Amino acid sequence: MSARGPDGPQAAAGWYARFRHPVAIFGNGVGDHLTTLPGLRALASLFPSRLSLVCMPNARREFFADLPLRSVSEIEMPRRRGKRDLAARRAAEGVRRCDALFSFNPWHSSSVDHLLGLLSPEFTVGFSGAFDVCLDKIPEQHEVDRNFGVAAALEPGLRLERFISPPAVPERIGRHVRQYLRQTVPGRKILAVHNEASVAERNWPKKRLDALLAEFLRRHPEFVIFQFGTRSRLFGDMPGRERPLYHGYLPLQYSFAVVAQSRLFLGVDSCMLHAADFFRVPGVGLFGRTNPRRAGFKFARHRHLVATAGMSCIRVTQVLKALESLLD
Image (cartoon, rainbow, N blue to C red; front, top):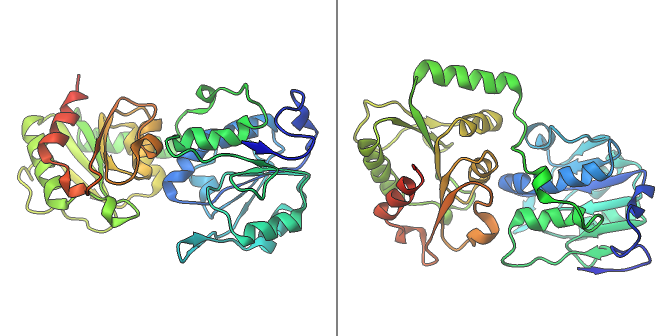
């Protein structure tokens, strides 16, 4: 971590309290919202009801509902040619006043430079040399720890453990999901499955997944499968179809509520894996070239299976053994 100016991280404790209009900005992949949540909670705790947030549409409702924010400005931060961008003038108009800016974005672009010029904050923290405090992006560091570093740059004594509760799910949604599960699969345990990463090469071959689920159900008839997905509502020619199987799209907060009621999780590098982690659902994470130390489980009991040569190198027997090791 490097800093410029007289107000670096070595300043007196509580020096940041002078900022009356702090602003946080974040916009990235769906799962990244969860790994950013503890850091945003910590930052909001340093500026009670004073922190404003610039985020992507619906992020406040789906991920950051429990943050005590002064205001929220939602704007698109689309990915173009592999890089994200934002409408700097619109973001500045939504914020209006800013004396300190904290960026949780792992990316940087000229539009962010434009935003800094429009807002002219006294102090900035982020993951680029454009900020007063430039945080290091350590390859082996978990994304939760990396993002928590934004708040820790102000208050090194902050403890991550205070801020790692699961994402807030509205009570009516949680109640609806619990009632639905009681009525449709009473007394059954749930294996939640997600095999749809944002990048296709991160997914496990469907034939192997079908074979795994069929064998798991044969050996553990007390379970049902709840498979999250958007691309298909049908399983393949999978044995054991007399058992209740669920597959299809659910709104994100309903998906979180189902994960919270699950006994086990199986999935690839995705938002749902992070959700299982935050809800402390024991799980198996399947990884190819993505480093699980950076993007895998952190809080829940887990097993990581890694095949850097490609997801097809992960065998059904390996996954079955890993899942059953978590049943104790």
